[in-house]
Image (cartoon, rainbow, N blue to C red; front, top):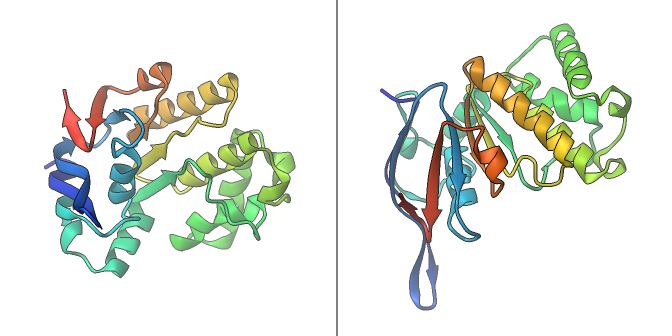
Length: 222
């Protein structure tokens, strides 16, 4: 069985005019080790699909299986536990915690996994080095540029070695050289076995994936 299976996944909102669909009958399988790119115009449902896969949105119809677990049948707290165990998420808007330093932001995913303190320190130090942000470890997010915040956000997503990385425009606020560094890093993680699902408008970054899924008005189009 696939790592992720979606069957007739749908998402809609009630409006004055009735029901507006954001996703329509999405059916697909993603295998362990895949690198998938989701593309499509603004409003196509790309970020919504990622939010559902990451269990950040629980209000949808259809079936979603992750590692044989029926996510659609789970209680919210069980979904949160599954998310923390298997998913790393890179958001378009960073979502760093403003009152925590860079170091503390990176430590959080490890604390969720009950990694011992000494081990956490070693992993965070290694990650700061890998992303060339050692000098930023005691700064708060509002003291960083957009690009630096995005680097920290990517570092936080991968630090606990999740099975699946969901990346919503992961290079959106980065210079080309930083963007390439992030994409090369994601590619390297993928080659080591991590499943990656990215949303991008950038044709060059899209080419890093093995398969492109096109969305239009909530539908998958070939």
